[in-house]
Length: 211
Image (tube, rainbow, N blue to C red; front, side):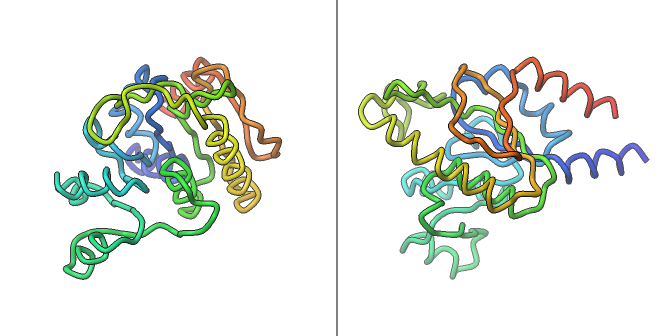
């Protein structure tokens, strides 16, 4: 019976994991017991989510080189190399490609929405409105620049906010909740979107764990 309850909890609740530094305060292995997990890009180096999404072709190549796509449900963009591997029977899936799907974080969120979870939480989405991004967990490693994005960061933020609003408008029956790890609240005034504190998220985790 307890196992059936856990399956229902994971079916109803999804966790989209970004790679902003605020996610380091969470134990992803613990969270995977109560959430269906969707991760982005190099997350696989430290944790294998249920779904892994990469729009960056360099990182997508790395994921395939390391054969991580055999350990999860891997989604990426079409491209000669990926299409070739797909036709050979490798476990590669392709995301919807349109103007509202421009980054891996949005791809992970939209896939979670498409999979009909009732509630989707987002951690590690650390954006800023001062023309920079908070430094990525993997900054300075392969395929990542060494520090925050200083030029164009605000433009990229506005694009992400637009895609977030699109997900809220398209999937109105889905509750989308961003765990605010860096005191920035996105411009997204939608009835099904909420910002909560880390402390509030911890309380929700305890609630789900204890039934």
